[in-house]
Image 1 (cartoon, rainbow, N blue to C red):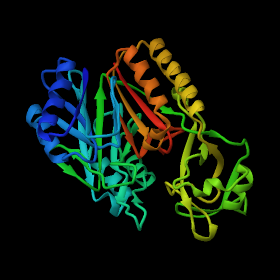
Image 2 (image 1 turned 180 degrees about the vertical axis):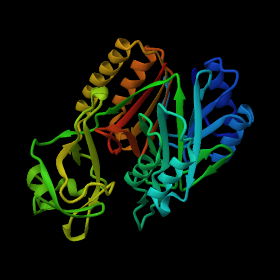
Image 3 (image 1 turned 30 degrees about the vertical axis):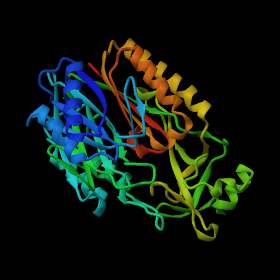
Image 4 (image 1 turned 90 degrees about the vertical axis):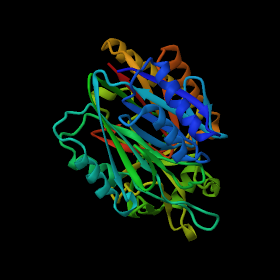
Length: 403
């Protein structure tokens, strides 16, 4: 397997798509592109960009990707204008199978099941890349956006994949930071309301790092004692808003929509093969309910009886943890004599405002190691935490594709 990455401004989308595919293939000296990962900003003409890439690649290349708030390569971190990025991958010793499930918003579990059933069951996959539209209904000045929940999508995949791949990782795509409509690329078309999977097998060893996003604000654990879906009303049988006021020491967090400094988190036991990942899954607090009745989480998977901690964002802590995690995974790769061919990096769009120090650190380390990097800013990041792959908030996921 070989991989190359290209970046351009997509003001002329057809030409940009052609250029991206050509330059990514040329960088890695790939004569025939097996897979093209293609991402762009929401201001781009998606279909024309895809048409240009298809014109270069021909009909046999798998093309997937879609919306990105911003893009990251070895040389670029861009979230303004019309940035677009592509990774071209060859298939000399790796096999790829792609599948799509549409009408995601009707039932994410059914979409996950459909994806699993569309993938070949006779192949023992090393990695399943998953992309889906984070936004169900775009928001406006009067109404907030409605999002597609990821836990039922992942559950549908996990229950119906046969055999289960070693790793499921990927991203919930986001078009912009105001939760506008998203689109995905799948083969010949730009589509919406969908989930797309790419299954990889063969001579491949992926290393997945769930990058630290928040750290515990206090060691105290709380039990969710009253909730409904993504609404949390009580912790330890106390009104959640009043309790958080007491712990944080002020009410200022209530004015943030979403809450940028605090989140709820669950700690899962770390597995022996992922000591370089964070053990925490955090859940973004979108805001509070009328009359301070409760808080609104980004995902509906924290239920009554769940043990949670109050998590705090810290830019300094994120950078320190990123450095530590990069050191750990690169050392592990060296010990196991694995050679990285490419890196995918899915970073939370909410971390853009902090000056992107952790993304710059990832960029610098991978460039120094001569590893081609394709990254995007997205809505949700997916990686194995504990026994299963889970969706993350305020975090990042680094996927190192090695042979």
